[in-house]
Length: 275
Image (tube, rainbow, N blue to C red):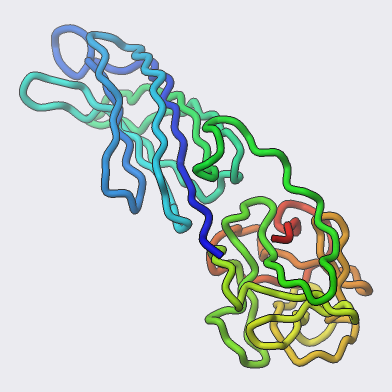
């Protein structure tokens, strides 16, 4: 199964209250875009002699699943040397996958001047989705047929999946959130006894030490006791008894986060889709 192809879609709309960088006239502003892990630097056209440039330019930037942030730099075009006016770094990991996010934020000034404000849209989405449209909500999960292989993806950001760390086949190996790739250590089957079995190891999803709130999820030999019997309730996967759900610890939806059993609340870090 191939990794999802992703774009960072950016619409740079305008800046306001751009300071003068020279003694005469207003600035001639343009904005550059630098995404961590992407070599190319993108930029808008420059606008002559204005405090309030309007660009309305779109950028569709292919990104890898380990994206982290994007740097916007506002620059004054000059005949000899362009002057940096201000900048802002925006973290991408908190952005909800597929959603169009609008920003209108203060920029960090350079040379002791005010920085102005920047208005833009950001969207992280599959490359085949029409930019700045939002995908339909994922279908509500239901229990897969016994024996059918599936992956468990975060409904909040389906570029991440439940993963047996290091593709381990050992009992006690922990389950983490990791970039979705669909290989054997991210594949599971739902068994007739309501256990969720790893295709890679043959071990099952287990709340370590019993039905204990906050305990990590591991793979363990099947015994089908209460800490191994799971049911699918909409997008929430929870123990049949005991009141715990599969939970992305502390809501940190990023690579390497530990998966735990936690009291059912149904928020975004307890919502999953089956693929």
